Length: 236
Length: 236
Image (cartoon, rainbow over all chains, first blue to last red; front, side, top):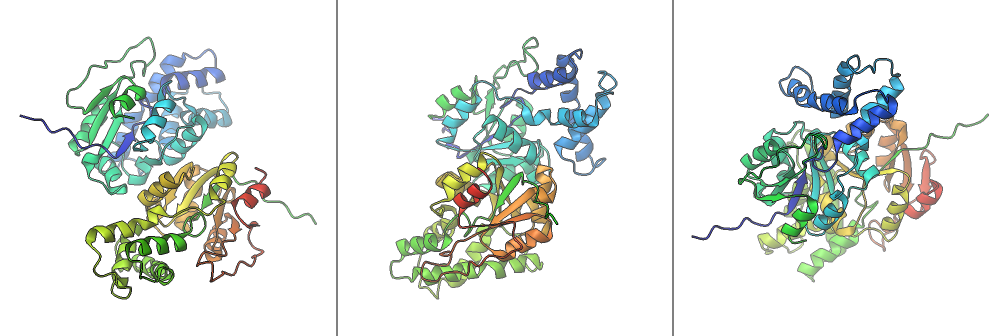
């Protein structure tokens, strides 16, 4: 029996935080630049850990629709006392909150995206707001064809409206879109909507001293060490 | 009395059809490639003339929210008999409808946008849908930092939600956004929302034989022959 190979994707939609950019070291670096005595590693983990619960408050209806910039600030405000940041000025807090706009790409990301862009439409599919993703792209030189966000679809991943929204925007079948992400739960939700999926290993997402499980999941269409390896696999 | 000079804009938002790309010659060329006997000039003008009335049907509530790709098809279907296109195959009609994705930039557009991008955030603000604008940008090499569209705001220009939406996306005051367009009505609506405005002369928008009135309107912040002249004026 021949197993049919999947149709070639036309659109590659990328998760961003952790998949394209390194939030852990970026956030740790920025907080330590303001307050060198803070444990940057613990602070980054705590800020990021507030993200899913905050989005659940929006999706449950407890909070109205909220941009991630504003959710980040809500979470940050709840961490100030614990990390000794409560005497930062409002200007410093506003600056720190936008550290998520200033995250650096993983070392392979720019070269990998340039290769993938030569053959496919490359876009973001992130819960980050459009302004955050556009600011990050401009600073880092991320060459997106298009920035798609929860803000466009008024729903956060893993809501099916986001994955199916990418296919609708580009007027293609869901099976012609491939979600590229470093998170198996995001990929599983995309697969349930009929998308192809590519898992990217980002073992240091939570810090180099805390390696992440990067075991392959056979349900994914692709499993690649990084974007360069994905470009190899996708023939570009 | 000193007249205060306007604050420097941070975001330049560009109208697209007629301002960045030449729809008249692109549409005329594509229809004549399919049916050389058609009057491409008259066909392009007729297709474009259906655009504002079709958007009004959506904004009045007569039609539900509709992507411009679908409005273009609605208008096209109404022109087939008049232009002798009623025997085109469905595949040819689908291809022709996407001619709006394949319009060429005016000769100054790529170089001008590259210069403007070096100093400002550059984005689209078009009634075209995201997929159309992204496809056009990828084909033509338009270097947008971000593609914003009526589709993001669920309203067409001149609805204030579109102009103010750009400011909201980038978290800036409306006065820090400059709309760049070749149409005085678009600019007037943006100005009423507090945006800065730049008028671009595109005398051949309706065809080289039908020059458009390009008289300056003193209410605009800038008036420029093309994007290179705008870059000169904005110091980049």
